Image (cartoon, rainbow, N blue to C red):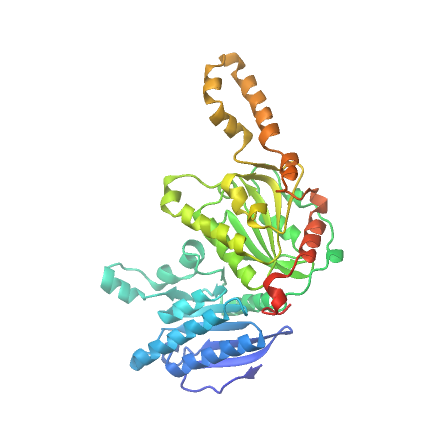
Length: 436
């Protein structure tokens, strides 16, 4: 590690060095000086560090413990914090940016991590726009710093924090792993991809998709936002030797339905991967969007549209696998052919439809079923369900109209996905923005 500037009254330390062979730049606010408060000199150092990372096309990691802008500097300090924000935005999509929050990060120091790609928080970390004292004086609400902006609310409720850690060392260890994944992405090698029975982990209607994701990747990846919107799993890992992002519906939570929070979570992940040149694999087992008043009021249409937009504008290779069900709007939103998927595969028993055949029959033939003899109603419904499945669903029809490229077996899955990614243009990464 080589310091980029000496320690002084600016309150910011910067350095350039290697993380297990991956060159990176790091900066840290010095909590021993005015609680890490940011003045114009310290902000200038952060801006210089970020701009240098962009010039060298290497990751940049920030360690945050800061009360925000230095009060004594007034508007000068505020302008400096604004310049940090602008530098982060300039670097967005050009180099990976990781923030590690090790203590209170308030005011401007809260928004800087939120602008970065990945936010990691240690047990002692806190993120809030205004601290507990200001909250109490303005609103009358009494809350401590942990409940206001600690790891639990930001990893479970707000979605600000991607990863939490038990202590500072563990948080920095997580940051090092992310730097390696995003800073040295590698190249995919289909010949190195071994077959595997991913369906071995799908036991019954309700199962946890995370072991399936683990079996898909070369080795266990890093699940981002594991507690926020757990019905949708987002994971970074290596696939065929290449850094890859995986988006997967999780039937263990909400039956795998998409909801407002899950759509936002997936959209953010897709946009980050696309910006940083990371290819995507999408595992689909979704019975639709979660219905309800709460969902509509929570912005499921607005936030769902963000997911549609994220996939439709992505230029990195992105391969979809329908493992079981892909119904309605959730089918479209989960990287369908219509949104420009690189390839769409499906397992033999998978279904693609507006809704399940049984639910469709109950809607379309409600009066006919109600008028039927009670003793014959069950048989009639079973026959109508079979006819509906043959007419509107099934992989044969999906293949005919080109929304599915091939029906493949679970054992073929890893190899076929690897071949599809390897054959596709590299997206933004081909322009050299992200080191491969």
